[in-house]
Length: 73
Image (cartoon, rainbow, N blue to C red; front, top):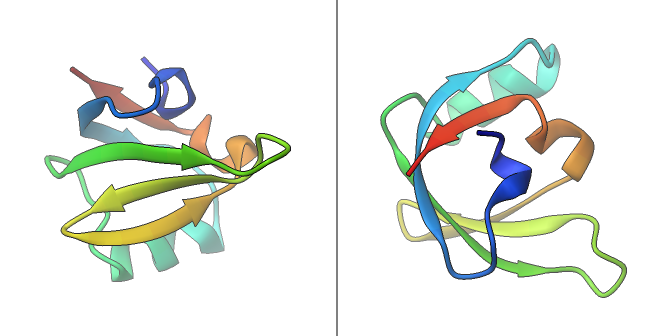
């Protein structure tokens, strides 16, 4: 399933980060790698971006980019 399919408060394990160019490098530098648990914390007022918690840190990821991250529950 895609990261964008998580509901607020749900957690999942990152399986694969697709080809999203420079953003992939930045995500990996922040510790977002395969095997890590990520939780959808909240949506922005207009729904994009979404805030996720990983390793105790909140990060905002646009839906367009989150579509390229595969997770499993």
